[in-house]
Image 1 (tube, rainbow, N blue to C red):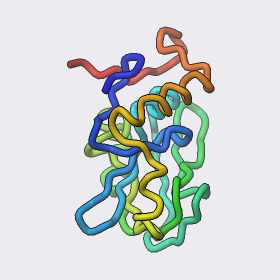
Image 2: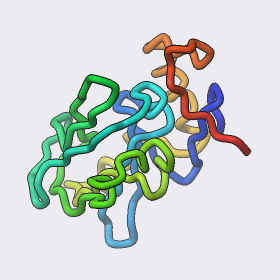
Image 3: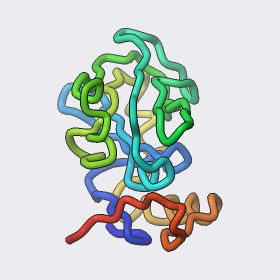
Image 4: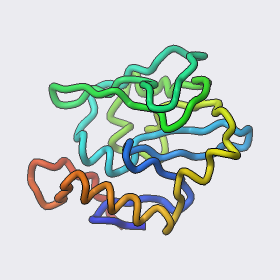
Length: 155
């Protein structure tokens, strides 16, 4: 699905207010990453510093820090759980986040608490369109503004 020139794969779930995607793995863990909109807002990312492996992460609390263009922000978790994996490739190549946000640029894996009860909170496919568009309107996102470092996917 394409929204304002940004691609959002239909097979991912989204936490629009946090700029994140979620993917359920076969073992029940969740892989989290910055979605195309999050990348567009932050621009080029220079570093990602995750919390320690095994850390207990509460919903709404930081699982790591993203550093970009003379600023930094905490990446907040959309749900509680245990940090079960960290994308170590980002230590040497943080640009992977921006270059391949839905693939090699994933951030962390989380062993979520009560995922079956939480799953419906995170829209997927066309069901996510309204929530993503609403977040972009709320943020005043304008992909034509030269100050926006929009990640536009070419088909």
